[in-house]
Length: 271
Image (cartoon, rainbow, N blue to C red):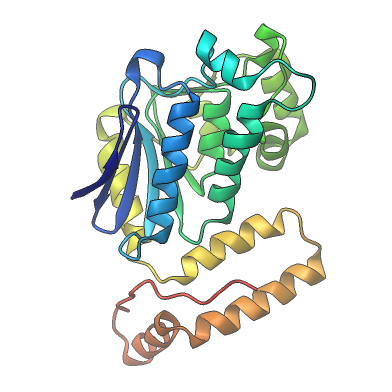
C-alpha cells in the first residue's frame, strides 16, 4: 500500500493494483465541497494516468458516502447567484462525472452509508456499486425546492425505469440499499462489517483482468446513447484492438494451452 497524495478531505492509496479514493470529511457527512471536488478530480486523474493502477475504487470514511453538495455559506458563494447554470456544477461536478464516464479503467463505488444528491450520482457513475446493508440513497431535491443534478435525471431512468425514477425524485424518500439492489440500481448489498473486505476483493479481481475491461466499460457507456449499427461497428473495431493487444494475445495463448491467463493491463484504444 502506497499513499499517492493526500488532503484534509481526500485520501488516495494503491493496494494490489487498485487505486482507492476515500472521501475524508466525516463531520459534514462527506459533503461535496469545491475543495473536495478539486481534490477528487486530481486524485482520479492521477490514478487514470498511473500504469500500476488497473482499477479504481471510490469510498468514504464515517457514516456517510456523500451527503450531496455542500450547503455552507462558503459553498453558496462559490456556486454563485447569477442566472444560468451554477458554476460549481459546470466547473467541478460535471467535469468529474465526465472523467469517470470516459475513464479507461473499471471503477467500483463502495457506498458505506447515506448517499444523497450528488453522492447518488457519483456512485451511479461508477461501473459497479456495492453498498452496505445499512446504507440508503436519497434524492430529496424537492425538500429544498431544487431539481436533480449530477446526471441523476439521465442515469436513473436508464437504470430503473421511468416509474421508479419519478417516485424517487418527486417524493424524495429514502431508498434502502436492499431495495436498491432489488430494483437493479446497485450491484451488490453486503453486511456493513464485511463491506471493505468484499469490495477490495472485487476491485482486485478487476485489477487482475485484461486491459480490455476498460474498453468494455467504455463500450457500455457509449451504448446508452448509440444507435444499433454504430454500436456493433464500434464493437468490431474495439475487438480488433483487443485481439492485437498483449493481453489479447496472452488470453488466446492461455486458452490454447489450457492455463490461466496472466494479464498485464495492456489495452488498445477505443475508436
